[in-house]
Every structure is written in structure tokens, then in C-alpha cells.
Image 1 (cartoon, one colour):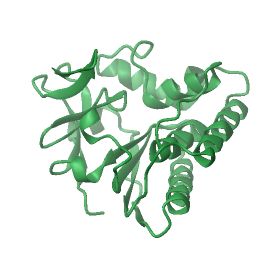
Image 2: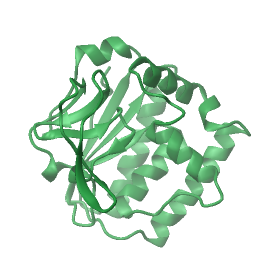
Image 3: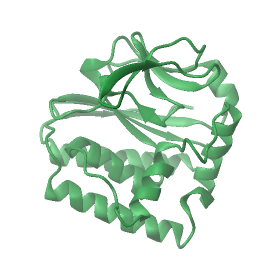
Length: 231
């Protein structure tokens, strides 16, 4: 790994069962969604339905754990859902999963199939390292509203991912900012899989291995490094 990722002691105290695995990839080839990436999303929705067996996503034990943590740092989990729960709800809806671009489709498919939050950031757009912290409340989060760029600030105590330039993702893994997202021009990415107890670490490792295989398949020759689980 060439990109530094840290988790603050305050976040570890809030969620002692938190584990993450990072995959760093260079030499990626991105572009519009393809028939192949679309098929992966459809298959992920089928795998999700089997996993849930008629339950709602929030009834899954892993999703319930994320709801508890969101509540603990002051967010309402029924309004601001973690990324995996939000995607799962879309996967099970009539409209199905969105097609964004090839790389985003790949990690969204893994997120839905394994019911685990997965994020992707453009390494070349990150300033310094990435840090998971509890916000002070004056940090900048640049986003888009009504077609215009706007600056928001996280709530004090909110868990955020940030780099040296500001917040890259609000409410842990709820909303990513456009500055570091994966675009069709992305050639280097960091993919982060995040879990809480009671999800077994082996399940997170399996999801990471599957994502790494997909990245290699769709970007032949890419240099891919899968990190070890970090607690």
C-alpha cells in the first residue's frame, strides 16, 4: 500500500468491532458500464435475495450493527443509511441497481452480494492520506446540490473519512464527495471494505478477494494490492 489510511482512537472506541480491508490498484481501465458489469449487478441482486431470504436489509445482523453505530454518533439510520443498506434497498426495488461506470459497478456488485459497505476513491485525487475520524464540525465537505457546487460541514462528532483537503465521505460511508470519486478517467483507485461485528473477518476477506479478482479481470495487467484486515 502506498496510500496511508488511519482510524482514530475515538472511532475505535465508538465501534470496537470495526474491521476494514483496503485494495489499492494502479493501471486501471475505467469507462462506461458494460454488459459484463451490468450482469454482475444483476447477479449481485440475486445473491442478495438469497442471503436475505425474504427479510428486509435492515433486519440482517450486519446491517443492524451499522444502524446501532450510526445512532451512536448522532445520525438517524432510517434517514441516512449506510451505503450497503441503501444499495441493497435499490437492488430489491423495481428499478434495480444504477449503472454508474465500470469500476463503480464492480464494487457496488460486491457490496450488494456480500451486504458490506464498499467504497472507491481515486488515488490521484486524494491529498495526503485518508483518515477515519470524528468530525469537529468545521471541516469542508464539497458536494453538488441543484447542479451547483456547495460546501457543507459535518455535524460535530459525526464519523467521516477525510484527507488533507477536507471530508471525502460523510457519515462514515453514507455520502461520498465528488472530488475523489471514481470517474471514467480514473487509473488508480483505493477500494475500502468496511465491516462490524458480528460479520466474520473471513467473510470480509472473501469479499475483498472477489473484488480484487474482478479488478484484475476487467483491467488486465493492473497492479493490485490487497491489504490485511485492520481492526
